[in-house]
Amino acid sequence: MSFMLPLTRERATAFWRKVAAGVAAGERAILIAEDPRGICGTVQLVLDMPENQPHRADVVKMLVHPRARRRGLGEALMRAVEVMARECGRNLLVLDAVIGGDAARLYEKLGWIKVGDVPRFALMPDGAECGTTYYYRDLGT
Image (cartoon, rainbow, N blue to C red; front, side):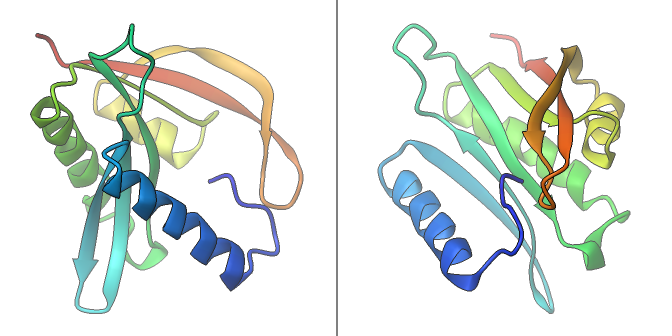
């Protein structure tokens, strides 16, 4: 998720304010899922691409709260972000996930194409190194 421990309220607030500014500027779009207890999931579509890549977007920060996991919300968010991408004129999506993690299994189940693994790409929140798998989804023209 890009956050290191301990995650303070100030750092979390700064992150979401930056996301909100990106949405307001048209640089990204966000989907939010709610249940009776509040927000339980989100996914973002980064639209701010180089001028030679106007047809694609990056899917980032697909998050599902533990209370909502294993109920289809992740799949619903991913299907919805594909619809949103098409509405934004994008037909190629790229994302990454921790090698072998729950998200990677979900993306493969949904038919995303694995490009490859990059070892030691990032750090887990506790500082341990982790690898990343890159995926793409061709939404057609």
